[in-house]
Image (cartoon, each protein chain N blue to C red):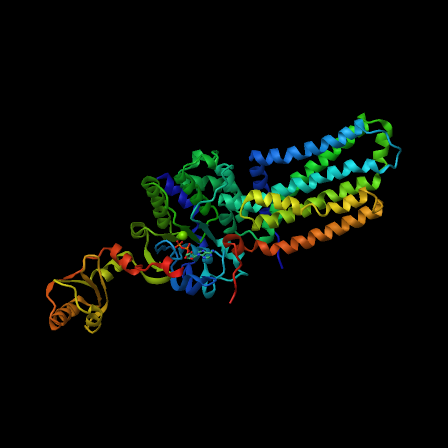
Length: 331
Length: 246
Ligand SMILES: Nc1ncnc2c1ncn2[C@@H]1O[C@H](COP(=O)(O)OP(=O)(O)O)[C@@H](O)[C@H]1O
Ligand SMILES: [Mg+2]
């Protein structure tokens, strides 16, 4: 496992103190004029955690990364990044401790792989530039390509150069903004493998994605964002939480006033009609809610076809949580 | 208080020079103008009638030569930010610890070095050609213009500086590199007015005048540099607008 050896060289355990969280975000909001990119977002990320930031396009993921990466200033709220309060004055110090891989890797295409890394090593004030670059390239399996012009690399390889660049400075936190978007499955898989290696080395990773399977596969915890934070939890918890908390109600004909009915039913938190004409109810406990729902339906004289516990996948959870046309709402 | 980390500035300069060297349109663009502007003054040396020493016509070619430090850097400077933005490299660069001022100075120095180098090289060639090949009367006439030669020497980096500041300002705001280059070039011309006034004799070309105007140009450059530094706010560079703070 030469890859692992290389990572070990890169990751310096002593740069991390395990007590304080790597990231504390407290009621953070960013508005552009009257357009809200994200609002009232709070969460913590522990050191060594791979934290997934999951949300559809336009949810505010990139803006969050830019804000925490000190590129843009929050409109309200506060945060602590790598132990340092997020203020304008602390920008240099914070940036020294983190690395950010933006949505597109942004390499200088007329420079070679090594020259690109050399530039960033200079900006971070890295010592032992040559060995550091070699280690970073070995870590992403690109050692033999160090003399290639970046303009001649495939998208997947460029992404790997971007990852190598993010590793150069031995960051306390790595922010990866949709690191696999636009990659073919093989290249995406390679990036996943790299992130898994990093996770085992204990690097804190803040990973944004709009892909559920990616979040589920890679992350210790996942936050679901759609302008506001919808939920945070371990992927299994999230699934469980929603797996057991929905009922699907089918009736022979449409209900006269489902809103009024379900609102008055004990144990039902919310409801929606799905495409097939069934009613999907969010409930706190199905064993309490199901009989209540049955009684209520009978009470209004509805013809019940079935009442069943929903077989929610994490995808359903996700879709339900983000089920709003954010883009349209903002326009 | 803003400390400068010179190693970061140097990293920017090294990267920029590498990148420029490998962009054909930049190299050609940089070399073509000086070559053209050198032709006329050299022809003047050979074809010009040997006027008596002190004739103002000896000063005209110098004006043309001073177009080099004005125009050459504006092309490069216009590319400096717009080019990064177009390549998508601006954002990763800004996520590093580099400070606003280090970024500006690194970018400016990377334009200054080749532009001033090239300008002095062309003047050198011109003066050598005059010394070696010109009619002795013409040569004497040109070397007699001491104040103008001093002005040439002093104004070159200062005009370059102005051009760079203007070009970078335009580069930040312009959506397109080409637009930035054209606007930048036009906007960098006004300080040449001083040279025109000296060449035409409206302002007597004395050593004092050369020194005074050099000082004025320096002050203008410094003020302009300060003026544009607000444009290099990270948020503005990334999103195109400055954050309205609560
Ligand atoms: N510079 C900006 N100016 C105005 N609105 C912006 C800007 N950047 C992002 N937004 C808006 O903020 C919202 C979140 O965008 P973004 O953070 O890019 O989402 P994501 O990365 O999750 O796709 C979108 O509605 C987007 O249009
Ligand atoms: Mg995004």
